[in-house]
Image (cartoon, rainbow, N blue to C red; front, side, top):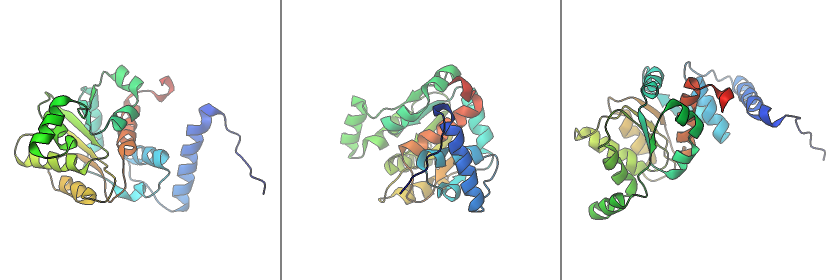
Length: 216
């Protein structure tokens, strides 16, 4: 069996990948809604999963809001080190945006132990003490989304934006649906699919609309 490989230069791989994504979407007769197409395509590029063309949902006018937040240097809080690591550091640095992850903090571990909850939930409590607008990029822990929901209900937190993409089976779908009931801006991957890489991909898609990709 002879396998034919495409001859593509390393710097052209991403561009060719997005061309293939566009071709596949056309074959499937899926037309992405603007202005969210770049975000959805970035997630598909990261996962090779076209289900995200249907699974990703956005609150009204959330893209413009997200870009304004980043222009104002809103900080980002992730629920995993993996999500934090996946966000483009050069774009963050050039735009002057800080990313926080509190999973390794001793006070978070202690609070989780005292409250008999997960560290991810305790991280959200610590994040609620940050000053200024906060973008939450939650890619793994449904308990983080649940705690965000509870903190909003308690009047202790007003998220500037929640990116919710936990993956798995236990309370994953339910936690995402809870966020959808709140009067807050959101970008949510409904269903069981998601992951830290998806959360990072969404953040990167936003950053790349503000920062010239050719400089990365």
